[in-house]
Length: 223
Ligand SMILES: Cc1ncc(C[n+]2csc(CCOP(=O)(O)OP(=O)(O)O)c2C)c(N)n1
Figure 1 (tube, helix red, strand yellow):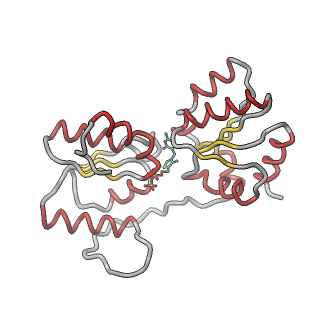
Figure 2: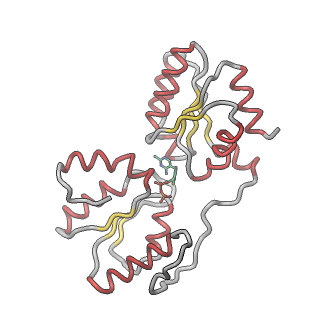
């Protein structure tokens, strides 16, 4: 039995009935074990405050433990309100933050740092599309039709952005908060009057993209 499995058994023995979380990034190894071991069912949400609130509600209704699992740094910080509220009301809410387990797993960084190369032309084959394929397509498109300002979110899309031959790029530093892309694109559009290109992962898009679209009320932005 590995450390994650014994942790899950311990949580179950102490009254946990499920885990709420957001998989991604360095947390992926232990999310994989949570899913494969089936010791506790996993419910995934799209924004950390929701993870904390769901776990809080589960703890209250079951009079037991609610378990929230998120990534360290921005992910954990984003859940502080929910954890603080649970703490203030003495709700049992253990928060699993992946940093702890990363070392035990000995997992290599999930994102290899890629050399900056600007290949031209996308080969048509059956292989999965990579960030480099996307960057290549964007480079080709802009070479032919002109450039657009780019806003990038956190995640693989930021690596894609690094391979785009463009300097009008706004992006946060790597491990800050997801959800930057779509609102930043709106800002770019307002500031430059140009149609922006937004590079966003599906996870980050779900955090703020849907709301930004609701604010706009029109289909000006394509996610
Ligand atoms: C608010 C917040 N939660 C969690 C993280 C940690 N984190 C960084 S990248 C990432 C996964 C991003 O997935 P997605 O948005 O689908 O982007 P992709 O990697 O596919 O481009 C996570 C969870 C973060 N940076 N910010």
